[in-house]
Length: 507
Ligand code: BES
Ligand code: ZN
Ligand code: ZN
Image (cartoon, rainbow, N blue to C red):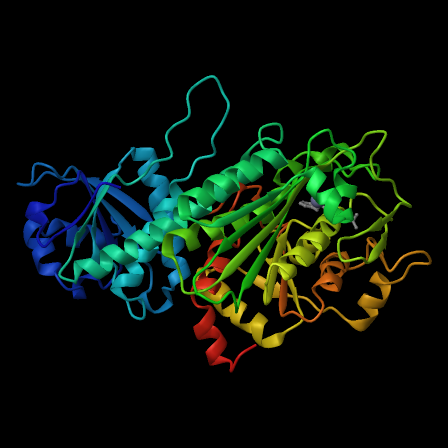
């Protein structure tokens, strides 16, 4: 993004495209008189007649000829009823604007800020949401066709037509853009084919991120994992000819390495199911089984850009789940890094084995709070569908704070119960401490609950994104494919961590 500037008058707008919010009572907006006197009364008529649609999320594009030679058209953005307009609706509306801008190939835009103002959304939030929504809406999946990829760059310049303080608006807009760009990076990781994104590739990506944002980074290879006795991730990796990696990034915000939030991601770069092989139709799409890792890396990118006053450690277990003569078998007994043993009843329940070791390692690296995020079970889809992330937690206040962050970002998270009876079933085995597949009834809870066995008393949230990480149809803020879900919520949670903690008298 090259230019960010303001203009106070329509005469001096320098872009070809001006974006204006409209609703039935737009004529009450500050600056409306100037608008009419510059563009003419007919626009008021168009709004009254419905030729410019004021309905929520309705876009109307109109060419204009004025004394301003730069300006070629206006994109009117319907805001619907002001009383029902929320941050999320505005985010989604700007997502649709982003899709439209892509169609128009418009990269230099002007936004008349005051036309979007509506209580309780203030000007800085509008600036933030416009950048976030447009950025996410603009995203296109990189492809491998022989035709070249369209560049994913958007907004080379933006100009606000406003009377408001431009410095704050610019700052908010820039943060919104960081959020969108980071979501889009996570999406691209999820969308990458598995032959082009292996565990070592994922580790290389993390190293690059660390260089860019000055994170401490550690990559453990197979020999090092063997040395440490990380039997969980190694068991999953046994069927593969590609090495696993355990990726650790540290963002140190304070002198003392305390109050550390740990983000733990499942980075299964391909899940065949192993010897408990998936039916062929369910295997397609399993390139996205590293969605948790992508979410963690996306959130870390935001942390790297915005540099909050909060220590963070990220741990990602990366491997694929393949079949060979040496692959793990149902009936195998696995000794995890924690020392706990697991009876492998289903080699397709591999994510929890990887997470077990990653969680133990995150605790060892100083995590005082844990969030694990994973495409862990089909069960969460059965329970909640494709638009809600399923969650478990062992700490009510900690979970409540996370929900607050998720409401701010508009990403649905729904808590599920983890009962003593569930735990009993996870611990039921004649030959080991735990089993990795207690049954198919309500099994989202068994998947997350298994990870909880390694968390012990650390405040913890488990996020099962199997339904939400990959979208079959796309939505207002993005195309089908990787969604980058939980990137924004985890980053917002980290950004607001201390405040959320104080509001609840600690966790
Ligand atoms: N990676 C899958 C979960 C998944 C399913 C992700 C659909 C995305 C879309 C996971 O490793 C898995 O296979 N889970 C099994 C668990 C079962 C064997 C206990 C499942 O959900 O069937
Ligand atoms: Zn699996
Ligand atoms: Zn999996």
